[in-house]
Length: 331
Ligand code: HSE
Image 1 (cartoon, protein in one colour):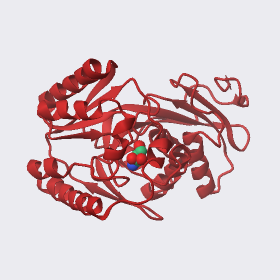
Image 2 (image 1 turned 90 degrees about the vertical axis):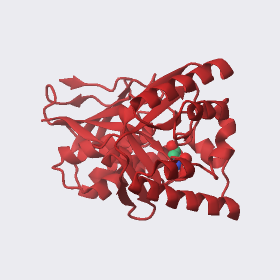
Image 3 (image 1 turned 120 degrees about the horizontal axis):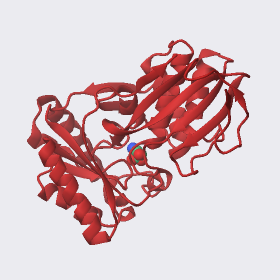
């Protein structure tokens, strides 16, 4: 089968029929920061997610990149594509000279605050590793995925890639290598996600934060981060509600999402335990007890975006995805 870059910019690749010598991986969207955990907390959702197929191809290294589901906006240049950069990271680490063609199927909206570039990078890294024999451990895969993520946001942070890779609610400690710590969540924790028809570029949303924070905000933030971990470990909903707040990034970024405060307040009025910007936004998350509560919060948040700002939204109600990235096909 002759496989061509869907935009006609890549090389032709001789690949085998069907999924032979290819691996297809799904990596889920994620909610990062979760209030007080700027760059260190993230949680995996059941959906949406990105899929990446990495296929053995003639030649050496990455010979073609194609992308679908992105409206033609995600670069297919291997040096600018998150999945391709992660795949290259795997090839470099393993010293492989195998030729590969990469197909990215975007399911996560662009610039949504749902960790789309991280999911593509994670799926690419996991697929490439599996294709080459599955020799890399999770930390190595995370580091490869971070190479792709870095290109998009301009910074080293693994709070989307870590939950997308490993699933669950993850604390990721920065450093080389970063350290992933799985945190428990109450069984009845359900997340409501409302993605308004707006975009926020993470790179810009990071730039407006500057480099320093006030001591008072720091004290509040690290108190909340510690309190949230304790709350999760004890399934103490009152502590979770008190601590899942952002004293550092969200107050600065709120202006990037028209209607943010009103939407967040509607979630809390509907019974959500906590609500805030998902990553750098514009998606807003609400943490709820039970599916019924999450459905009410999602409906009311979407209603607030519609009534107060005049924008439509997509809604997702999801339990915590415990699995993270998963191999869908391999052969
Ligand atoms: N922690 C990152 C940030 C996530 O808030 O900039 C970006 O989605």
